[in-house]
Image (tube, rainbow, N blue to C red; front, side, top):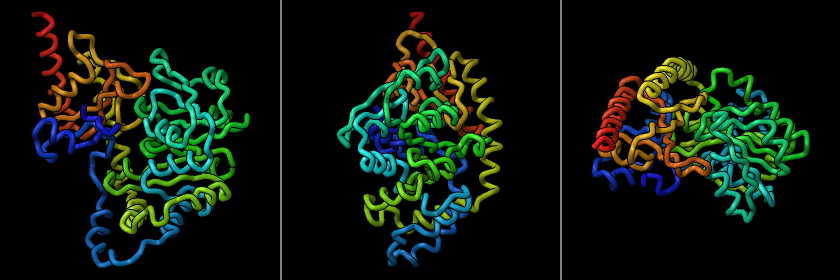
Length: 363
């Protein structure tokens, strides 16, 4: 099982499982920008050796100032973290909800953070019949006072209607919205809740900087809330949790406007192309909106997410077994959207695997 530690992108486990060096795998199990880090990251790395003997800014003021300008919010409304995972854990530890509503399937870190803090989970089970969308009737049926919601959701790629989230806030609930993949949405400004979070004391928005800018080795994310709530979180945060290299890289990537435009143009062309090709192979694709696809496998004897992952791994291609997400069964996988030649390798390998399972079923 490649998801030994709960996530995709575990190249060490892939090496141990399939015997290839990490550099030989094409990794569709993690959802990174396939262009790799922008040029500004490399420029920072060249000069960083001369600064490594200095402590990082404990308040991360340079990056906070740039993010405040970008989102048009108060600098005091922003806290920077060692990846979105630290911030998910931090907000749960700070608010300590007795029960948290989670809409399954969702990012596993939500439930992990709740359980570590001694809380309980009030599950909302999303349905494949409406592409795993969170609906108003589901929200109305829930009596929870604390919600963690992914928008776009991982692994479905579905956006949640901002009005639906604000409805929860207005009726007295506290909502943490994970917008880790929001950068990939063309109309981001119309659907993000960052500015609302800066003024509503019961609303928090978390962002990741690692997915869009392909820097997962540098753990970097941020959260927006009211200045008063963010001050509470900051007092609980481990000192210097964001190192100076991450801070400098975060500032650098925010200047990469051409890189961002190229990424958006690529995704708008490549995503529908890949969906068409996958559907032609017999996969059912959940209609999300970002740089990964949740798919249901064709019905073939012996074909499961785990068996397909193993066969693909033997060919040097890693995919995510999505059956490890609560509320998904063994027929679901998740694929990242990558560059055209990489997507063609994915499709060719999938075709070979499906042929193998189909032939085995005939015999």
